Structures are given as C-alpha cells and as structure tokens.
Image 1 (cartoon, rainbow over the protein chains, first blue to last red):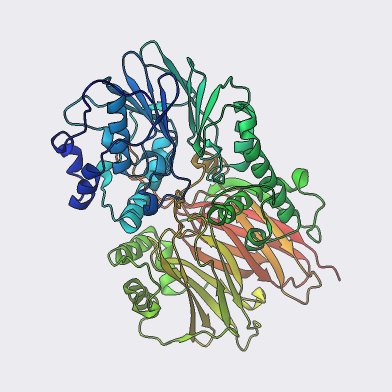
Image 2: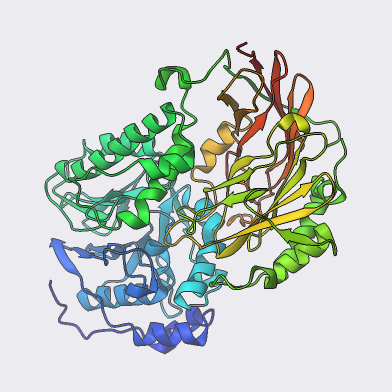
Length: 351
Length: 280
C-alpha cells in the first residue's frame, strides 16, 4: 500500500460538526474516536480495497463486514461503498486521506443494504463541497422503503441513534450505464436487472480492468438472496462476458481468475434453484422446503446457518410463481384444477 | 355477511389508520421474551378487539401456532395455525385473529370460517422485522376465546420487510394462482392454496424526490367461496407478506367452482376461479 508523503488529515470534530449534529452524543463520540484509517490494500494501480469481516452485519465487528474501495484519478477520488456504520465510513475516509490529497468527487453505493451504505454521512463535510452520491436508479426507492428498519436495527443492535438526516441519498441515478471521469481515468458504472437486489450496480475501472462486483459476487461468505434467484443467474451469465483482470466481491477475498471466480456461487445458486423447484414439484410447503433444501456437502461456505434457510425462503417465494405447465412437471395436483385467473382489476362497488 | 365490528373498522382506510395510530403510540422495544400478557401493545389491541372478555390459554387440542423462533427473512415469515376442532354445527371455530405485537399494524389478519371450511386451519406468511410476540386467537361459535403465543426474534443483517422487486410487483398486480391438494372424495376437508400477486405496500416509505409518503396499497379483504357458499373470509393488511399466500381447507360438497374475490386498499377487485370436481 502506498502512503502519501503529505500530512495525514484526520477529520476533526469541527469539520464534521454539522453532520454529527444529527447523531446522538454516544454515536458521535464513537465516530470521532474511531476515525483511525482502516486497513486498505492497493490491488491495482490507484485501486484500493478494504476487506470486511466475513460476518453478518452485527455490532460484533462494528458493522465492518462489507468490502469497500476507492479509485484515485488525476483529478479526484471515487469511493465505492462506505460501510455499515458512520464510524466505518469515517475510517474509510481517513484511509482515503492518508493515501491521497485529492478530494472525493463521487461516492458510489452498489445497492441499498446497510452494511454497504451507512458510512455515507462521513463523506458529507461542512468545510468542503460534497461529493456526488451515485447509485442505481432503483436505489432511492429501495432505501426509502428500508430506512426505518435500518435505523431501528442500528438503535436496537448497535446502540447507535441516527435520524433520517444521517442517511445520504444519491443525487445521480444510473439506469443503464454511466461513465465517471476521475481525471485520466474512467469508471464505468452499470445497473443490472433484479439479481442480489433490485438495485445492483457494478463499478469497472477500465485502466486496470478491475471489477467491483459488490454483492453480485460473494466469496467465502454464503451468497445472500434478496432479489431474484433466476435474475441473479442471468446477470452472472452476462457478467462472464466482461474483460476482468481483478474482481472485488462484495464479501470475501479478491480474485483474478475470471470468470471462474463465480463458479462456486453459480454452483450454490443453481443448486438452490433446482432443489427448490424440486420441493415445489413435490408439493412441499415453504416450511417443509426450508427444512429439506440443503447445501452440497463439498461446499465450504461460511455463515450457512445464518443465511441458507433465508435463501430457501426467498427462492421458494419466487419460484412458486413459475408457470406450472412449463417448469413443474409432472403435475401433482389432483383433479382438473387448473386455475383461470382474471388479472383485470375492476373497481369494487363502493368498497 | 356478518362481520364483527372490528373487522368492519378494518375495512375502511380510516379504521386501519386508527388502529395504526393506536398501536404505534405504544410501540415498545422488547428483545427478551418476557411475559406476553405484559406487552403494552397487546393490552391496547386486546381492549380494542375483545374488551374485557376472558381469553383462555389454548391447549394443543384446540389450536396451535407454528412460527420460527427467528425470522430468517423479515419479509417472509411462514406462519401456520392448526386447529383440532372438527367444524360441526354444534361447535366450530368462527374466527381466528393473527396479532403481531410489534408490527406497525399489529392486527394482521382476522380470518372468518364457516362449517364448510371443514377445518379452521390457515397458513400464511407475514412481515416481522422486530422482536415480537405473535398470537393466534380462536373464537368459537359460543363466543369463547383461546390464545396461543409464540415469540419471534428479529432477523439480522440486510433483511427488511419491503418488496424485493418493486417494479416486478407492480407489473403482475392482481394475478392469482389457485391450487388444490389432497383427498378429493368429498368426505374430508380438502387443502387449497390461494396466491395473490400484490406488493402489499405498507405506505410507510417516503419518496425521496417528492418528500411525500407513498400511499399504502395492500390487500384488505379476501373472500373465498365454493359452489357459491363462503368457506373463508379474511380481513388482512400489510403485515401479510408481499404476494399474499393463504393455505386453507374447504369441504367440496358436489362439483363446483372454488372462487376467490380479493379487494385491495384502492378498492381494486380481483377474481379467480377454479372448477373442482370430486373423485367419487
């Protein structure tokens, strides 16, 4: 990792006062005390990555569980995800400042999950022009729907009291592809159809062919499904075609063997798809499917107890809507019981 | 249809908002199971639904409630309510209430059964984001109340109740699927499943551009008939998961049509029908 020769600039309480006002005294104290730079590695020229703990988003690791990164151009810096608490964001910002004197011009959020985005507020600074916050066009809606639950979980589990003011929403939405110029360096941002979530965004550094896949790729950490299983497999097939030298997953170690780096995840998700379809074909209820659908014994995923049952739940709720006739055979239902549905809504009479 | 006053209240948006306000005011933080009776939200819900009527602890012979000890996914928590009482004219379960204390709207569903239900069992999926008591309360035709309670721990991590694919949910709004399982002899109650494609939005999210709250849009009533006679009626709200899913029983007396009528909070009405013949 390259260290800047310039004086280390640690965010001071003064500079952050405006943004900290929204926090409780407790959270603010934690944040300022915890603003030592986090560990980052330079994985390619000007591309820095922090590997989060391979754990669920809990206080045990201070919410520092997602992989974060930043890319340095000749003019400015783009930050890719900001961590699971404001304190993690401050530590990331300190790491940026230790690395380069250039300002942060973009903060990119790869999807609206708390472990990736709650550090955003650390990049809002009364003393400097704010960076542009960038995310998928679907991101704001997804985050708005989840924000009350994230704030509740922060208060309940982390003892961090934040308000709406501490949740930073993007000012730039990506609905297909967007290039961001950092000065002699272009990042290509791409939003994807529903896969891990309905607002997944990847970041590709053209110069080093580094792909920040975020949670479209899990390594070691069991993949977590919060969008569409079939959609995710389709998106992975499209990702394979990218020219990638280094891939940074959302969780777990970086890799350079592209697209083989996706093989383990593809095996897991394909198995989840076929086993859940089989459970549906056998007429199992969602509870029964959760009990039955397992993981291939050869797989060495972490956090299976925490996430596998959840994945089966989500997969079942998606796949039960597949057309029975084309995908689920043989028919197990007795009698001539094919539904005739009319999906044309009509106004009810007076409710 | 004879619907209880509280169910009638739930049928109007005003009623829902009233119950919502009543209960959010008392929203409590609980992480440990504690005494289910001491839950302040339950005390309010109890007063509004049942006044001072006695509620007995249910024995497994009457009603049982299956819920996971931890919500794996906050958006989809399977709930199974089983009853052991054969529905006869002399004695039957008239209603089953599903209460989730710490949800934004705790009165999640009121299911009304008839003798043609055969069994007053119901399976569905609910949203549970916080540590909460979940209750099933059976009301028999003689007006007695029996309650069973389970404590469900909140899910962790990135799981939250809202839609997993907001655009897709809108695109298939109102699509329905029926499925019928089990014995078709016409002597035993038959298990059926109704799936309704609907976002079942709580309306609790603020639009970040307009700064307005998105209007709630959720299924509020489901009526299921067989051969023209009611087998299940449910007053429900956004505690039920996206794409509401109900498994229930009915007694197929002769050939007929299993029919669902679904009405949502915007007064949209959806219908689906399934011809069903017995195998005699």
